[in-house]
Image (cartoon, rainbow, N blue to C red; front, side):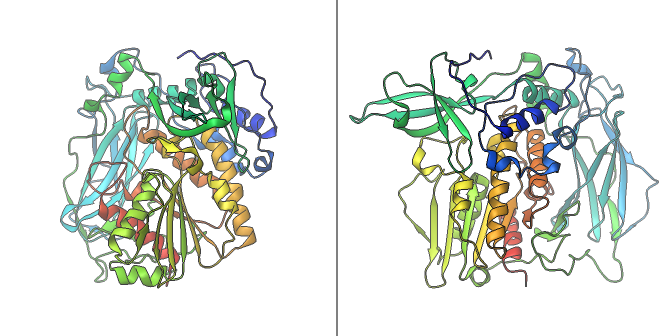
Length: 534
């Protein structure tokens, strides 16, 4: 899509140039990289960008692929790709050990691939035990992949492997990140004093508005981030009152659409390994969670945990189960929980209100999709609130006044031992190049660091993004990169992580960006394990 520049001159500062350098350093040497999206004059955040986040070339590295030359049959096929045990099969395997397998990627004609870059998902499942754990997939970059599975429960276990995207499809997605400043736009609603309304296109960059006329610029005073809308025909820029999703752009060719089609996306490979038996060890049928309580700053192992009997068992700390309303109330008593982010975090708010009858929602006369939402238990001193982050936000029409930046909200918190902050970021950034998310993360990271400095007893929890998306607008491949950025941004701060990516990819369930109740329950239980570690 060709975009035209508007005629106004923008001011920039050190952070914009830093982000420009980051964006240009992403290793896509096969094509010229366009200039980065628009400026963000927020110097106060530039110094807080961690070193791990500033090197996107390393952080977002993915094997380059030569493509299929327009021949769909040359792309990786879930029908012909195979996997087998790396070592001879055993009668039984020891609990706490590992199972290794080798995956050979092949194209639709059965020819072995000579390069890597495919996105495979491997799982070890125990259907009768309602158990599952994600396997590690190591790309040897020659068409071969090494699969490793920890053996965490006794009993039967079965390997399952799915091709999420072929390397050729990943090449399409990476090309979109490289060449497109966005794949969607948004609508801004302006209202005059007489009630007359005008709608225009809005986005993260003035070049995406598609008009040569002057644009309306909106700078968040707390984060420094910028938002742009086309100038309304007759109304002034300060009459912006509403925001909603706009159009999804057509950014793929017919051939690229075929590479991302449902018949070759998220498909199981033919079963290559017979079920195995894992023997008990010293009368133990389960690898137990570590004894250390769940505290912020604990290193996260891979995998971070596993399911058994539909219960999540953390491998980083002693996770707990909160199966009754009373146990949840006992944990949350006297606490104020601030949830900020996307709709996958709103599911946590909804789950708690559903499972705990005494948590009473307060009607704030807002849009449920974007909030803010509030529930209280006055007798126990519990306040539970959720609100969506600010634009870019895909939503129905919502008042602009209700869309607060996360940086603004964090800056208004005193913090303390009774304050819990939960952030879920990323799901609405898969339609933009990574530099846009880096800009958002830099501001939020600085705000979190300030909050923890003025009140270290505040609990801050970062929820990683779920699996579920399978399109050019929100592929799991994009989400995987977003999670890498999230973990790098907060790696050196004393925060806790809830690895929703692994929780939503451990069981043999259909992927959904909004997972079912028992997955949400496991995510909330792990949050509460940090709130009430003992």
